[in-house]
Image (cartoon, rainbow, N blue to C red):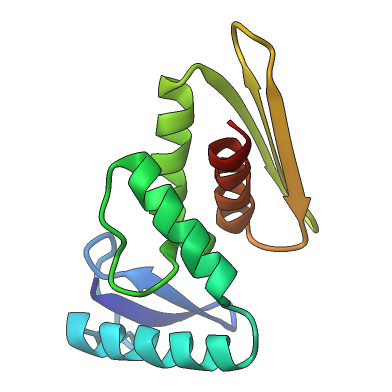
Length: 142
């Protein structure tokens, strides 16, 4: 996806190019440049231990659970809000109520509406990562 790099109130942010209007000072990165950067991040994150084999295996299982093919080799479920929404939709379809909170700690709790089965996960990580971990618990534990 093409993105725009923009400074807002002295903070540098990355925005979806399709979702925002171009402004003076934006740096536009087309799909190819963005893909090249994600490949670089993957390599750096893997070498630093941020992404590991367990995370990739988890994301393959989540993709199969959602009925999707994994996106390239990037572990999108850890960092991608749109992937998080797919997981939440699937949980709703399965009859789960989802409660999420993002503060200094991200937390997610799900409860099955009819059988009362619950799962929860919290971490100092991003909310999409917490939701992915919770979905993985559900897949593995059932």
